[in-house]
Image (spheres, rainbow, N blue to C red):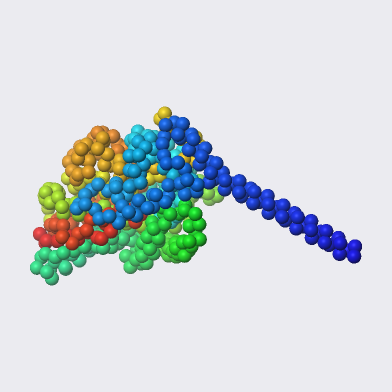
Length: 529
């Protein structure tokens, strides 16, 4: 009996301890959740309001998310008016609503996180310049699946990656890739020629699929020295993944999202693993070929691996020196999708706009023939294309690949006269900035390449931060010269071979799938010159 009583007392004590432990854990968890979902948002709200900022009152957990998703879906479902370039109501309907309701000093709520809406170029310049203080926002874990590698990194790790990657995109290296760009673009031209030859020199074509295939081929050959067929599976998977991510990006912080949409989340993670394995195989083959002296060294991956090897040799084979295999895989993923999506979107909108504004198409074609004649475009002469460059700049102003950027800070920061409390997000509406009439004039929403006749620095009232299609400051896109070189090459070849007009079948419906893309393609009527 004594033994049984001791056992019962021990079990009782154990149960009591377990109950107390569980209660402590629940209290700590509850306190943590209360701070995250109520106390901290209300504190930040008070600090911002005291400085003259206005917003909708904070709603527990969801903030403005319900209204953001609802207004975005409504705006997206409405057809565009003819060929309007005023895209802000389509993508920033809630932002415009907040600015109209509360004025320029406004913020909105992404769940329990307040987000300052910055429209002042000077404030934006300050944020971009202080890239160690204002870091990439990681509030939404889904974003890492569409922007891995350099795009998601911060601080010293970002600086290390940038240093190792940069040699792959300097002008001397890009020059060695020009022939590859020409071959890929010329393959697309030959395909269009075949369609025209079977239809008496004129036919209707949706150029969007061709541009995607061509830019994918460029990435495979110029970045990895592999064939399009080898990379096709990777592109297919990344496209599926980006669609899933973009469908849920704004909904992520709604309560119990991961339970309701668990199937999509599992598929996103599965694709990430599959792409990682495929890319790792390409990297291993490249390393083996380089080691055995069987590979050329003028593609992005080879230059990256060589730069990484030099960094490791220079600093010694120590921990955290150079890029790990996972780091290289992440960078390659971003090359694959980011590099392809940016240039294909730029070319698609350029062809659409030149199909509508045929006077600019004629001027661009005359310049191309003046610079190259019937000869193959080359690296040195591409820089002489002033009118083509003006057109591409204006396309990027009206249809930037990335329509907004986000930053956040973990500590209190001064932004001009403003105190930005740690934990506040910064929202930079690039598209709205590019079409701000106070900066660009009353014709800000019109296609007028002549505004760039004296270069970017003189456009937009000379405000360099008013034009940021590739970002600005230390974190400006490392691949922007590659994208513009490819776009100039492709557009020059297209203008040398065809003239084109917009088809009645064209439906103007820009949408965002990582970059700003034509939802229903770009239907044009091609004519052989």
